[in-house]
Image 1: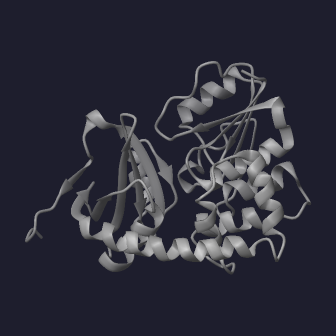
Image 2: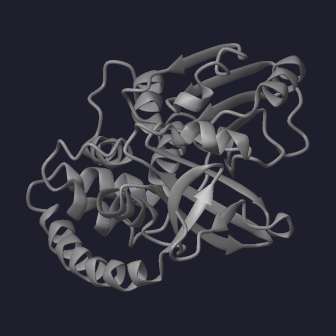
Length: 280
């Protein structure tokens, strides 16, 4: 393992975007490893320079990493980790910026944030303050997490003509996603999660869209879950009045007040209970 190790939030554009930023800084001098909440860190993280982007381990693990390594830098924005990021050599925490934008402004201070990352932030914080974020991010979903490819995307998203093909593709994808969501919501189930009313649906895709549909139409917590490699991955959504990051923390995860997640071994069973029709 190389001296510089970049650990980033697995499976999301913001986490990978942060890793892409670090790659533009370090290139082949570093290793880039996706990580998940609720899982133990890799072996061999000793005497390294570690950068955690859009992610932070539990306080106990952070203390071990800090004691055993040359440097531990945390660049995060999840409210569930606000009290933990300080267990580091250096940290930047900002709940108003996404992890990838924090990383850009850390590694490349004074340089304009690419539109690519601005749109990633816009959807990650669920703001949609920028025009065409939904279309562009739908198009981005069709591309793999590849550093060199993201350099190309960055350049083309800055070009008014080149970006048009992504907008067109995104519009078509959004239409299709709308039909998929219509089908998936037929399978939602009313459940109880740690005493909170919720609706759950099994889906490995469109977690945010499905979760927010439940929040808007059912006025309850949205649970979107899927199975992979012996683990159950769970995404939670709420209107922010119920802090789902605290619920996620109970299960080894974390996140924001309105969007959080966790994962657990499938053998543990689902942590929610189905509420049968007619039950108050």
